[in-house]
Length: 353
Image 1 (tube, helix red, strand yellow):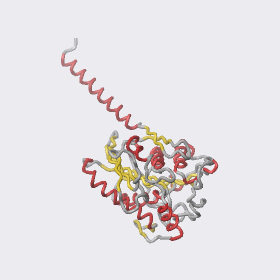
Image 2: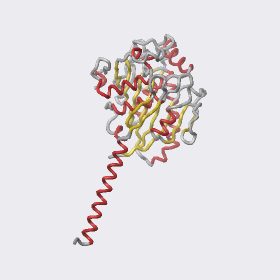
Image 3: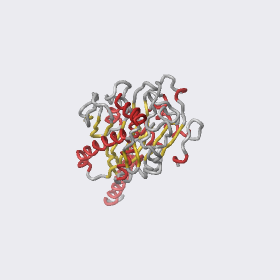
Image 4: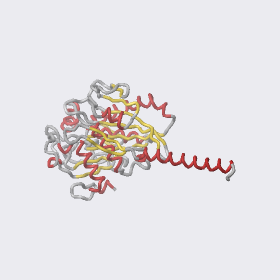
């Protein structure tokens, strides 16, 4: 019969093994978390699926990450309000609070949001209560080898008349290009949007970062259409300030007046060659904002191009069929499923490598 010391040592080994096993299972659960996000169902079923865990942010942000791109596309889709009802955050608020479990959620220019005010804070910056809408939130991420605070920034696309005038008219006919942004000429309306977000971010960090116990920060910046242009400028600024930034844009307007792909490889712009605001599109009301009539490469970072004409896939969509965010989500999902080499989905190999 084993002695008491032997039995005690055996029990300790079993307890130690049990703790290691439960710890591994716990981490595995965190790292395999799947989320289902819901967006405006006007164009399709209105449901996006993606993984969400700390492993998506391990390593270098200048490497294309299919799973992170799919998550970003899903979040970009829910950031869009129902057509004709801007400022509600009807899908964004519950996605951030319930599905993604983000904390200290602040919505800017979503003044019609009726979601639980104990979970979501609506804030004001500037006079216009609906133009240039974005959100800020954070969440502790615990991986196998590190823990960090994830700062999520979402910038939605055009949904108001004033926004349309700013980027459709001023960005094309008015030809306002007087701003210099980190050595590149850019469009003043997009700079205004970027500065608004940076002001909100500065206040947000001062308010909450004391609670993060000095943890490392990592940023996930997501922009669609108009928001994509500003997202590029914000990502460039934070990157130059030494921050770790993962940036993904979809159907982004051209933020620059010249090619900026040799800078900021941590920014990934995903673009449909048939996009209504690209060289083959017609824009809104006849306008092609921010140089879209000439090129789709006047952007910071990589430009990943696929070709998909949604006029043949979603006949019920409105005039800007190839610009809708659900189409971008479906494209990213298909690319991730291995359709990159098909004739329908082609990447720009010069920037995809």
